[in-house]
Image (cartoon, rainbow, N blue to C red):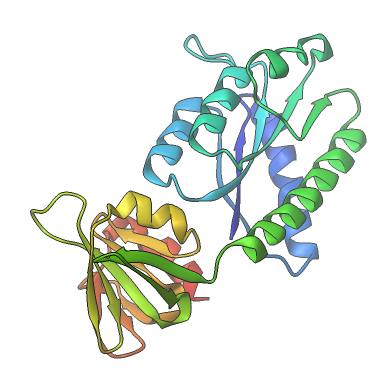
Length: 246
């Protein structure tokens, strides 16, 4: 899924951007969700910290009234965490566009707030382009998980993997779980997550294949998998998991 995040400190402008994004999502058959809209850049940074593997389109106001960080600097921090992030700046100051090059942000667009209808059209164009890039990135991802054991290279199709689990008490060790097999890996969960970005980090110690989720229990905080096994999920992930199943 491509997640849209908005950071605009003017409530009226933020509502307008939300409406444009919502209109685009409602009009098309696309795997896009507006997951965060805020006037506080720290909330964007917190999202990046909690969900470093998410694919995001970030719509940022350049002129954030924040003592610690402006929109361009926020874009630079986003780029450090997510090299594939799609970043769009909106501002009243077109003369500041050069700063996107100074900070190596590589923005998709730099939209000047002159006429609301122009802003709307440019946001729609950016969302369309971002989604096309997202789909190409998904198609380009390897369909097999590769690892080495005892000098031999192994490849397992993603569809055969139920979930990954960290090995408790052992750093940089994890288990790959198939329906009828468990394989020990010398790898960290963060590294594994980077190679299978469409898997879902449901818990600090678990990375699940969404295709094998049969259902979730909000009371026990358990995910039921296609083979009947269950694994835990963090309570704060309940809403997102529900959306993933739908």
